[in-house]
Amino acid sequence: AESLHMSALVEVHSPADIEKIRPIYPALVGINCRNLEDFRIDRLLPVSRRPFINWEAQVVFESGIFSYEDALYTRMHNFQGILVGEAVVRRPGLIPDLIHGVSGTGTRNGSMPPRPWLFWQYVADLVEARGLASDNRSAIRRRPLVKICGIACAEDGMLAARLGADLLGFVFAESPRRASADLVRSLTGLKVLKVAVVVGTVPPEVRSLMEEGLLDAIQFSGDEIPEACFDQAWPYYKAIRPRSADDLVKLDDWRCPRLLLDAWSAQAYGGTGKRLDPALVEAAAGKLSLWLAGGIGPDNVAELIRDHGPELVDLSSSLEKRPGEKDPELMARFFAAIESSCPQKS
Image 1: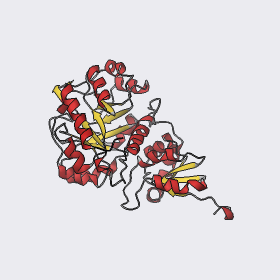
Image 2: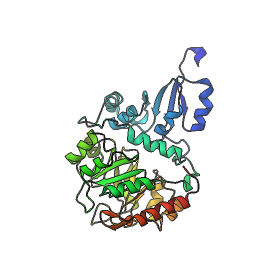
Image 3: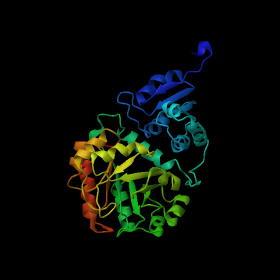
Image 4: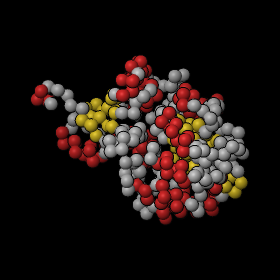
């Protein structure tokens, strides 16, 4: 190609691909988020692979780009361009939005934390380090990421971080586990990601904490629609509560790199202790990397890892003495169960 004065866009998908092309140091590299074996799209995968390209190159994010939000996501993670096909063939009017996204600076209303890339980059790095990438078929016994939710006092947050939590969840919605801005500020020294759990709208106190860099992401746990989430905050992810396999058809409507699957309840949006139907988990596993909540605890997490190989598990009520107060013994038992079921250390 170079002898004919052409530029070659060299496409990769895995770390092994990157090692193959390293000797020639191509100046233009594309990372495809679509697995060409099963055509599954994983928008987090290029972010996890990007650090492997450590020579001077223009790096292009390939596939999975269907909106302004998608294009902005690539910009925030150090991609110099995007490769788009089907989306603009079907909707040529999308082109200005994509151009705006790759040169943009925030959500539609300009809301963006000081380090908007931190959350998904940190998650991607953990996924890569633990061998949890969605195209890694041997990942089923790897230690999943752990989010401890419903943190309502500083002692519980510090204990969770010390035992090995990767994320802490703070509920900013009507709940006996409701957190406060002062609580989040008291835990600034912890080396974990901090997530605000909201229902419907982002409260002003949460927006202020995001702007101060004291929260890393928003978890929307209500009946929000995709557009409403991105218009309010970024980065974010959505917790969904499927009642049947029919609800899984709508997964592609969401633009966030990950979705949290929780058990359906008519009484509450979360923290009910109800377990997800294993058949729904299995059906979802064919569509996305599994982030699971709902009835997970010390007594069943090993079984869950064995049967489904989740990328992340999210716990709250199963570790409590009472709503809003964690039980140190249950917390210790849970992390011991995780370690014993995952002999391959991160």
